[in-house]
Length: 384
Image (tube, rainbow, N blue to C red; front, side):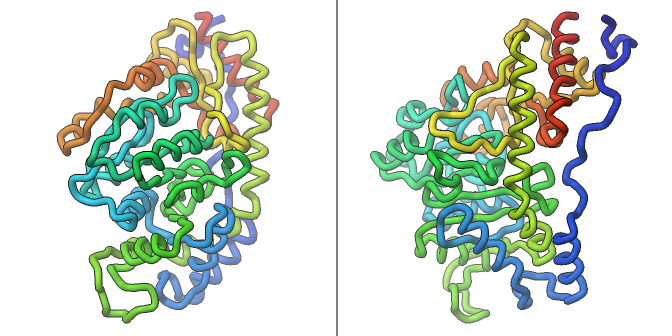
């Protein structure tokens, strides 16, 4: 069978679902109401940002939330609010988006990049324990691809060494670990509303936390150093304007009502694809122990057949089934090293960068019957 890359007929000619999906009626009504009110900013008297933060905090099992302009700023604000500062170290996984590390740099701290578990690709608790030094102040588990990190094991390491835990939950809206929502399992958790995420306003982020003291400190960081309930022009500490707008909140609030259905839809596609892959040298990367709900932001596939990676990606795209190459190892990024980041040996991450590809969220939103397109294209390309 001739590959589409070489002039053959592609496996799939129809487009995948678009992301984000079209506005639903509730979003349209709220956005229109905000636009017509003129109360677009979070400090102008509107209520949607307040409603969103309260709803997200409840969904995360904690009492407090602060909405911000994006999740990178959210991670920065969480670290600053928890007192992480210049010269201290924050442990981050090597297989994650660069913002996990650059947020640490923005806070004046040093990212310490450690390896992930070779099976599920989340932050490895043993690697964290080995990387702790007297300067270590915090650890940042990343709930990768929508599945929770192994939070009990990581929390145990953090407790032994007196470390703060900041969850990077950018990809994990609605995920649960041992039936507890992610985001509310550490000292602070941060979600993203960037364009590719499961809930999106184009950009945006939200910090959740369980302790009032942490909440007040984070709120101050995000509100130009004001004290909660204090004077408008009182700035007892240094802070920044990191706020979300009412327009963005109008897009996000109704999404909470449909998130469960969308997660179920992605889960059905992943289950169908898993069955289709049974006879191929391709396996889905499993979720870590303790996962009770994988929100399926991405499906990571480990390709076990010897194949040139660039050829695989180009050939699959030509077949109408584009796959993502995934993250390069953070420890190999010269820009981070130049800013003082420290990288431990990360063989599992190096292996993932060579052999793991992703099925993007928009594709997972298709009819589960169309999962066969992914398997058929993989079989065609791997047998070429």
